Structures are given as C-alpha cells and as structure tokens.
Image 1 (tube, rainbow, N blue to C red):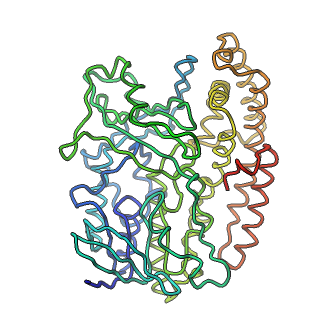
Image 2 (cartoon, rainbow, N blue to C red):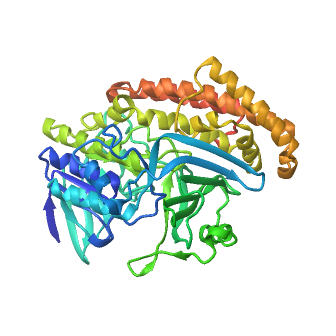
Image 3 (cartoon, rainbow, N blue to C red):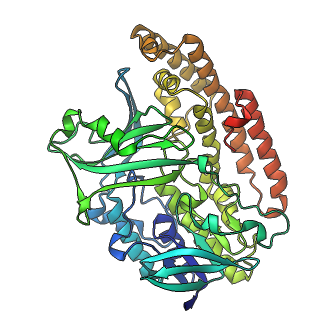
Length: 495
C-alpha cells in the first residue's frame, strides 16, 4: 500500500474543502486535497446556486481570489437577482422580499472548477478519483485509508479537515470517545433528523420566465419548499427539499408534477452535463452549527459542521468562511505544535465569536424547530399572515424587528393581512381554524424571544474548552425553556 505524509489532509473538493485547503497551503502548510470525483467533474453537485455578495471578504475570506472568479463570465455572477419571492398559488399569496443589494444564481459547476484551480495554484496537491474508506487514529486522528484510481493508498497527517459534506462518512468512521481529551469529547456528532434531502434539475425554457430577477420559493406538503432559481432568463435551477424527520417525498416525481403544467415550462428541456441530463440530489444540513467542530487532529467544516442556513438550506457562504476558518486554525495549531482539542479550538472561537455568522445560524434554528411542530397548512396560513419584514428576518436576509416601533408595525401588518386573507377565505381553504392561527402566531412571537436568548448565549461562546461544559449546560437550559414554552414533547425535540 502506498503511504503519503502531509501536514493537512482535506477530504472534499467542494467550497469548504477548497477554502480550507487554499488557506492552509497559503500559510506554507503541506496540504493534500482528496476528491472522489474525477477532475473534470469537480464542483458538480446538487445546489440551488444562489450566492450573494461574492466579492465581500467578510463572507469569502482568505487567499481565494473571489474577484477573479466573479469576473469570469462562465460563472454567471451578473447580479441578476433583485428579490426573493414566496408564492402560495392556491391561496393567491405572493410575498416579495427585495434585496438591498443584488444577488446571483451562478453556474455552480463552473464556480467549483475555478475554486479547485485556485486551490491548486495556492500549492495544494489534489488527488482525484480518491474514495476514503477508513480514518486512522491513535489518541488523535492520524490520517485516512482510501482507494485512488482503483489502488489502495494510505495518508498520514497532523490534522484532518472534514469537508465531506452533510452526513459526512468520516464522522461515522472516527471513534471520538477514544480520542485523548481532558473530559468527554466536545465534538458534537449530528443526528440523522438534523438533515434534509434535496433534488434539482437545470431546465432550459423556450422563452424568458417572468420571474427572471427573483429566486422563488413555494410551500411543499411537508416541511420544505420548491424553488425556481433563474441562472439566466431561460436557464432555471428548479428543485425542492424537505426535512428528513418528516414523511419522505418522492423528489423527482414531485418536482415533475409541479412544473409539468406550468406554461413557462411547456416545451422546455433538461440541460445536459457530461453527456447526461443535469439532475442531481443530495443531503443538506438543516440544523444549527455543531456545538464543537473540533477533536484531536480533526476539524469539521461546511456541511459537515452544519454551517448551512437551517431554514433556507443556503450553504455556499457558510462553506466558504468555515473552510477558511478550518484551514487557518489547522495551520496555527501545526505551527504551535498543538493539535489537541484545545489547540484547534480557534476554529470554534472564530466562527462563533469573531466572525459571528455561526452564532446567527444557531439562533435562527429556533424558527426551524418551531415550524417543525406545526402542521404544514398552518405554516402556510402563518406565512400568509406575516408581513414581509418579519419573513425577511426569519429567512436571514435582514434584522428589522428589533425596536418597539418595528414590532408594532409587524403586529399591525399581521392584523391587516388577517383581514385580507379572511375575506379571501384562505383559512377555510386550508381547513385552519382561527384558534389554530392565533396560537401559531403566538408561537412565532415566543420563538423570536427565544432567538434573542440564543443569540446572547452563542455570542458568549467559550474562547477555550475549559469553560465549554458550563456554557453547554446553560445552552441546554435555554433549549429546555424553549421546548417547555412551546409545549414540545420530548419525542419531538430536535436536540
């Protein structure tokens, strides 16, 4: 068996993997990046393709030159998206949430190809057609065993960066309880109910769609949504996703049923890639970021660390900044000669405290938990009632409902929308009683208060593992208070 020794092994050729590998390599660290696909298929994944502010170094930090990628016409960063739209066509509801700055629906494959090239240009050694089938450890994670081009190969390292995506197989392979930690390992292994299943197709239409400047979401019969995301006016990423703790949805059939009678898709075709129709499915993390993303010799990033938006499933930005954080923390730990849990803790600290986006994602997950307790028809009714300002806050496009005046205006908007939907018989259409609606609106109000408590707790995330147990116990008390306030029984509690 061929053996290879590196400072850092990055498993995964996606966004998180490229940002992690490039960041570590730019620090002079010897890095190998392992990707199961062949080189020409790198970056070809199931994704909604929406990306906002790709040139913002706060969201895309590190040595990857996002300006160069955004300037490449094939990537389609052309600021073609002005707004988010929520449609419930049965209820004749259409919510429009304008962006303050434009967004984009990119060609995710072209984007991924350029990330891989830039990582290589930073000095990353890339091994394609490499499938990891074992993680090695000896008090700390020490490497992986894999099959490359059909031949067995082993890799040894100081730090393994897990960028293998949601439901990473590496997390099943590592025996975390056998690693050398002062107490119980801090790393949080996610549960299968913390994930969603998604599927998308790239559809080419004969005529431009009328919503070519918007990303559109529509309710699904389970906890999830159908999307129409235009890459161009005639090339649309259409897909859907749902949470895995709900009844399964036959994704491809359900999507086909949604679009086959729409006038804009009459005569449309599915685009091709690599000689096949451009259809893909995937698992996505729909949870708060992991309580701790580190273990001796090991870091998790991107989907493997739960940095996907827990409500919308948006994951490109979270993959980028968490990948940077992992590469940076690994390089610092190796330079310091300390790859223990404490030595790698900077990854947790930076994401939760310094960058801070992980704290926001963890807080917003409370809305996901609350929504999971409600019947889908009640959720649809609530969405019809909530004014755009509050929906915009829940999906994470702004924070507008902080002041007393804003809360008053939101309450006025709910009352106004209630009268409008009552006149349209929307609630009778859904079979939702006024009592159910009132209780659900109360649930949203209660949840917002708990979101604020979560925000304060995550902003106080420990700067080192010595106080982690105390911090975690307090966070768990907030969880329990939230469950009790909403009347969520133990069998329905998410964490």
